[in-house]
Length: 269
Length: 329
Image 1: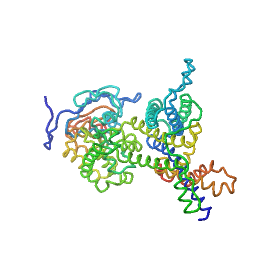
Image 2 (image 1 turned 45 degrees about the horizontal axis):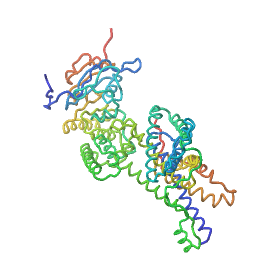
Image 3 (image 1 turned 180 degrees about the vertical axis):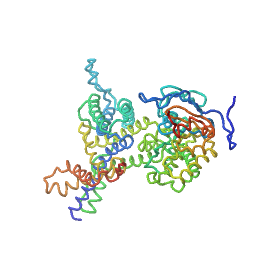
Image 4 (image 1 turned 60 degrees about the vertical axis):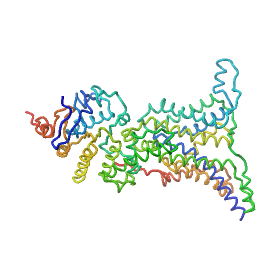
């Protein structure tokens, strides 16, 4: 049995952390996802790509618990995951960002990143209200983690700025910081580069690679910019009209006839 | 010092004290509105219910005694004991937390994602229901409330001002205590929201539900928490009003006075609720004293607050501290 593999650039990829088994998701009569299976391995950057409306975001929402599939199972850390609420999924160590950015606009950057630490803070309401001893130590420890991530993503300069005043690109980065602050076992990125200019895209790509490299974070990302995905990811799932049409390394996927058809269109005769 | 000026200052101070109580009720509104977008019409009734419960517990009344007697043919009304005020306040708080849980579990959990107007209608229903339950539980007679707060003329202020101005100010001890407690309550709430884990989660939910879910915050828990906090604020307001003018059902009407306070301060701002309350309190007392009574035949206190709110609605609809309403298209 093969447990993991070594990537082209020499990184060791570990065993399977999450496995989607025959997932089908319907909205009324529409099948957004049709019988899809794939896995995500420890430490890899896994991309889900496909044209608009392929069901990529639906897939991410299934993983993060926002949608409940009608059929199929999500296996997490070797066991089937019972049906749970999105916040419970988050508590299990699956952090995510949103395509349309969902930050706490009224709060400062630091506060936003600190909310990412909520699942790691265990003291109860009583100690928190007194704010001495246990609660204070916990706050300090978590604050250190948050500051480390803020440094890492180079947003120190805007730590105290309310998020509502930031540019789109910076907001995306703050959202990444918040998700990262949870020290997640899987980080889900929903179109991290959507709506960015070339320079911002390059920055974001660099951060994604650095995060994976530095913290060993397993990353699953959705993107429809093919070029970016091919450079970033170790393995790619390709979706089209809710079906999986390809799965493999970027070069395998690139040469897959179905994938080429889906992206470039195919002549019907 | 001319007597007119001394009078004015006294009226001003009394207005501040009255404003504190308005602010307390408005504070309960703001807490729930911020976290869940629900405009809780029942906040005033919650204050009434809390006051009724507290007075009933202190007095050793048997809850639902009329109902029990009617069904079982018994004639019991009192347990025959008196509960110490501190313990009674704790018990009342337990009841208010239970109420928060029940409201969330039985009503608002089923209305998640509904239009604000539907949530508002639900709170109107809740207000009448709660008033009815309060009546059924504790009876409708006016109760006196005594939890040991000092009451009556503050002689020190009276003496000092008499020596200084030749005119002694009449300031009620209860008003002073109420102001201090309200100030502590607000500081406590702001600190809780700003520096604790639960407070951070509360602010997160107030800002964006989806994002809050994604960082592992249970919306249900936070909603129960804010309803409990609103219940706590209602209890404090209920104690103050109850001590001042007896626990009676007209207490629920103070909720209406909180409306102009909110329009002034903004529906989403805790400091706004306080400042709004003080402005309304001072404004209506001063207006009555300087303009209302001499020129308009008095009784302006009934409508002054609403008129002020109306002016604010025209010129600054988000209130003094509210978030600016920007609709992105």
